[in-house]
Length: 159
Image (tube, rainbow, N blue to C red; front, side):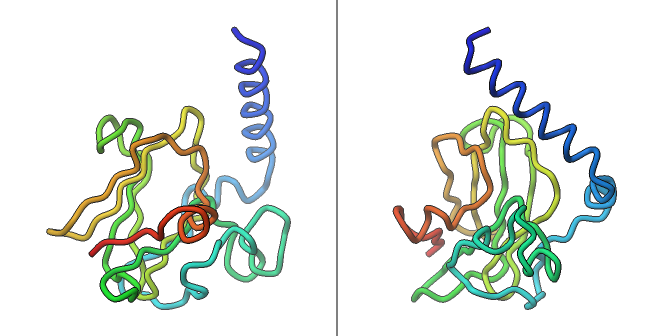
């Protein structure tokens, strides 16, 4: 194995051990807190959710959650896109196994606190039922979608 591969493997193993040691790990996996169609409890559309909902124990984590995947999808006229879906796939163009499926809430936001294995990357896809599908052609190794979209790249949009 290459040195970088060994470092990544060690880091991932350490992360899994650390998370497993957490008393809330099994609870999070059994009953994750996730966005759902028709809900409107989220806020700050278009902003980087992970700037507050992160592992550092910010007040947002205590009140809402530490989001492992989060972001906002926009529709026509820059309005938020209700009733959209984001999926994380093992392979490009919605191939292989699906890693995670999330729904946007009424604020256009999607989020989960469920632990996601990002080793090897994932390929996000967004769509509305019966509507346009957009896929990310390159692998992504994280879940903080608005850390790039809307900042250094275009917003997540379905028109």
